[in-house]
Length: 390
Image 1: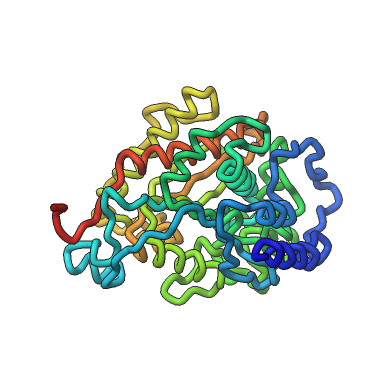
Image 2: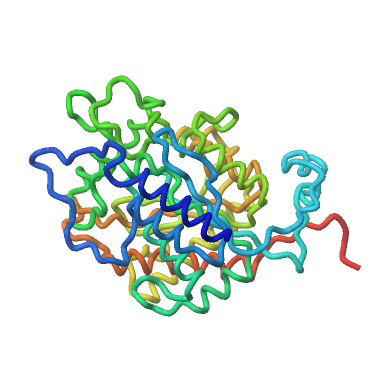
């Protein structure tokens, strides 16, 4: 009866939130058309996320927020929630010299892994990866039919939380379902948007007007329908309900490991976070090397071994290029080991005239990242205990 009721609700949602229900940006004359060779396994549309949610049987689904455009932001949970035995918020517990006052983590409790799906709506690669991850959690296989039963077992060893898309408004408006082989300037145009005169806002200037209102021609998929870039929200008083929902999940769940999924025109990489304690940056650095090496072993796009920088404290001098963003906020509300992952769009430019990835490559890049995240936290989890075990 519960499944029937949930199915009815989902069918209503699918009808109400159909592809025609909300305005999608039209591709302007002279710009290349949407790719027509996108394989069935590369799912990232709002309707495809809805369909995947409707197929979930093993996990639990929560509508954790509703976007300004009226779209649901889903969170999918696998594994029982642990009793954190919490007596304080994270920062108060740290001030008491022991984060276990916020969340007790011992060798018996399961690690918690939190996947924050793309908060920039044109960065579809992470959405395709997470839809496949949900399918793996349910069936043990990705949508290509490839067996990932070992990854499924790791999911089951953890409390796994998946937000397939953190910004459905931006995804809905984006007229492209992939940027493989398309000019990077097109990705920038529809991702970060344009001024009223048609010139691109571009990166990083798309962050210079926030909320993105006023001198706006195309509202880029970076933003929700209120012009909020969730990655750069006001975290002490969030403007977006999506931001509040993401932070509230982190606060309630105390994740051990959290990734915010993004994409760029370059090779895939785990980015070093700002405004985290040095020991946490060192852990992210360790994971970054492991992920890059995994790509190298699997003949996927990767960086030279000597490219990665060693983490340093932020207090040497004020770093104007660094920002207290969603990653920093996630750590400081929950103590999580948080980081940004940048996948490859596969877009092309004068400097990179050929795409560095295929659709298969992108899915492998995503799934190998997830697998390595589970490996890392199952091997190297930090335990928080109020007292030594008996």
